[in-house]
Image (cartoon, rainbow, N blue to C red; front, side, top):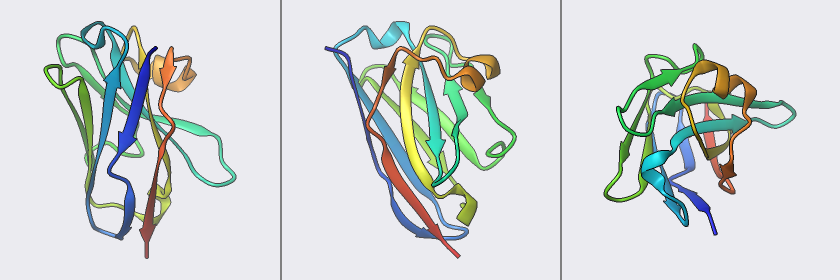
Amino acid sequence: EAQLVESGGGLVQAGGSLRLSCAASGFNFDDYAIGWFRQAPGKGREGISCISSRNGRTSFTDSVKGRFTISRDNAKNTVYLEMNSLKPEDTAVYYCAADDFCTIATLTQGDYDYWGQGTQVTVSS
């Protein structure tokens, strides 16, 4: 059974940093791009970043570009989202998901194959 488990969320002050992890199991991790999405209270889900399966190509939406980085360790079946210069508007539940491709289009569509349960990130002002 395919499974994605997010961790690393928490409460941080504005300007601070957090690193989220997404641990995968039950499918061939090397063959999948991994994306990060978030959903703030009362808002729709937003795709924010993804990393391709083999060449490490990354994409970011404008809202996080320059502040967030994404990386993957295929030996550990894990993807990381390093979040810096956090703002109160980054407060949301963050989800990781697996798909065939990493593009801005796939992030926008959000039609990924496997999803994690999410981890809460709260940024205080």
